[in-house]
Length: 135
Image (cartoon, rainbow, N blue to C red; front, side, top):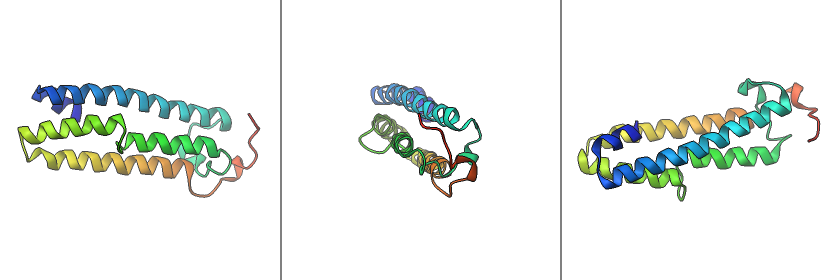
């Protein structure tokens, strides 16, 4: 939604923000898919809800999950934050009421990212994950 809005405005800041957001989204999404594949290779399960609690047995992978989800939420000083900031500034200059829709979009992304991390890394450790082979 933000990249499309920035592309329609066509100001220098919005185009720069859209490019920055697309590049950072590509990098962060690739990292999250790589982490999901790492969990699959270790557990032989593609269902993320069955992998909850894996922070106990895979602490370094959980740290990378936390870093990547924080970057996905566009926390400063990430490139996602800079891209969203440029886009939001240009959309606010174009139409101040568009900030409401942008704020809802950002809140949805934050809630989804936190839910992704919490459901895949935290909670209780299932019994089928108690004995993972070492890598």
